[in-house]
Amino acid sequence: MSPGGCRGLGLGGTKLRRHMMDAAAARRGDENVSTPDEVVRLLQALQTSDSAVDLLKKPKESRLPKGLPPGGARPTSRGELDGVRVDAGIVFAGNRPYVFSVMSTFLRDEGEGERAPPRRCRRVTYEYFTRLADAPLGRRIGR
Image (cartoon, rainbow, N blue to C red):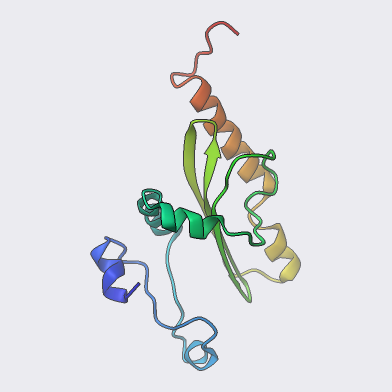
């Protein structure tokens, strides 16, 4: 996607300044940047594209499914650099899919990066949307 394409989608905080693995551009400070909100909006837009979701479903290592119950598709995208971690994805909680995006920066070390985002945050969010799918107004009738 071109930088103009990001603005055209209303993603003004998302700036694509270099290709992946371009160390010279990174040394100049030409980093790709975004916000968790804009990643969520982009993934929401991609949900309507089967080919985009199929691409996200390709097997890859991701922290997002950790802490969630097994089963169901969880298309994810991740990124990491020294001191930075990004995990985002479309999570299917029953009939209530949602988009989850967490960005961690200024991490002290690799261990801190592997713990971010915390499993508890992922699990609590999943449980909330699962309950919402079962009882949209908060009341479970007949249970």
